[in-house]
Amino acid sequence: MHHPSYLDFYEDVLTQSTDPAVVEGKFEEQFATDPWYVHLYRRSYAYHGVHPFCMWYWCAHAREHLGDVIFVGADPAVASRLGFRAASTLADALQLASHTLGGSPEITYLHAPPLTLADVS
Image 1 (tube, rainbow, N blue to C red):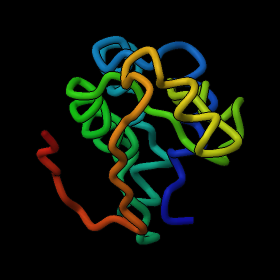
Image 2: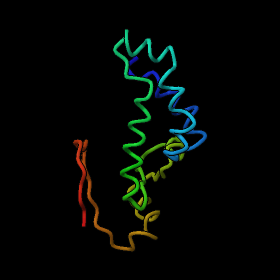
Image 3: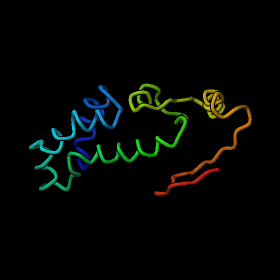
């Protein structure tokens, strides 16, 4: 109800590209001016039609600083659609990431993380 354009973003946009430049150039205007999204934004307390784009760009900016993102326990098809990888266990995730991390990585874990930017060295 509050995020009506997210499903279309997931189904229509991310099936074609996860590249922010492609996403913006090909789809953003359509979502920004869609009459139904505009109506829901103005009359039904819904987020604006371009809200998923803003969230995607935010995520994409963070990914510029990461070697890989692996979600433990995620549905592999969903993670792939989003441009990430999935592992069934933490041990599997570490194995997937071993080409980048080596054999003895240090791990940072945030449970329900707040809105932060961590500088890990």
